[in-house]
Amino acid sequence: MLPLTRIAGWLDGLTIALSAVAAAMLAGTVASYCYEVAARFFFNAPTEWANDVVTYLLAGAIFLAAPDVARTGGHIAIALLVERLGEARRAVVIRLLAAASTVATLGAAWIVGSEAIRQFEQDILTLGVHPIPKGLITGTVAFGLFLTALQFLRHALLTAKPEEAR
Image (tube, rainbow, N blue to C red; front, side):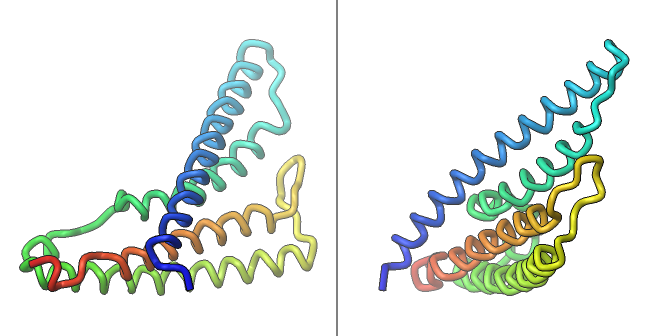
């Protein structure tokens, strides 16, 4: 079995790569939106596709960037109580919170992933002007949630042990 730190390294590499993909998707969102505004107001020729593209890319960008936010601890946290604990207790509470976050995010990934499979099986399409398989969007959301859960699990397993925090 591979050591946890090696698996964490691979997970970090994938997470960082997906964060770059998310950044590119966000750039595509901005470019599509700017093109739509320019086409509509300067040339009186609105696009049919821009709204769909912006929606799809934004959903992908959010959920492909989420694992990196979890990896770096950039998510919103109310740390008032945790900060008031002693060092030993703080490490335990942080590990427990990471474990609880893992369970919650895995549950969400399971629900969303199950829905993505159903959407693929039933050939459900988006309601846009140019519809695409809805499972592509939902599957991306599920994948992002799953990787976020793995990052939380990594924090739960690899955060300093209480005796190391003293």
